[in-house]
Image 1: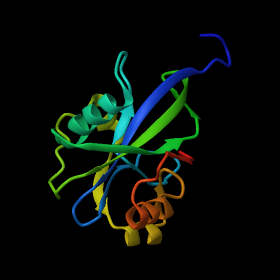
Image 2: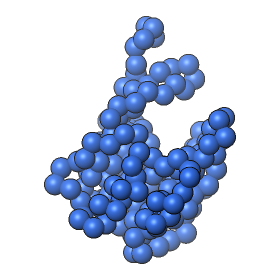
Image 3: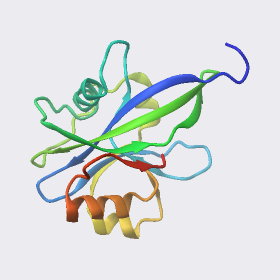
Image 4: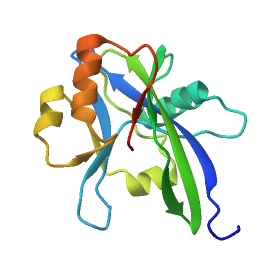
Length: 162
């Protein structure tokens, strides 16, 4: 790989809300800097896969959910860079909304990288997000979620960080 060249990594994430308006987030507690980071289910696309297909596959792998009615794309992430295995990736995320009945998350289909990186999960209320000192992604998630719950999905995706 040429120095300075970023490998594109399109990704799909799901803002998964239960019938009590709680949001499912996963935790990465092995960050090296001692911080705790929370993020929505999702991940990278495999070749030939659409963002919507990736979102549904990731939900199945990370939560055990099948037959989810995926809603609209609500947010689009500004590109950011990460390095894995010495390869620099430019991550471009699309966030989709889905509503489900409360359920017990099944992480038994986690891939090895997820088993190593993800240290937990929980359902968050909008109030929980406002008061946490943990890092939540995307940036501004408490306000984004409050707006989503109050106004519904936007007419076109909102640009977000992270």
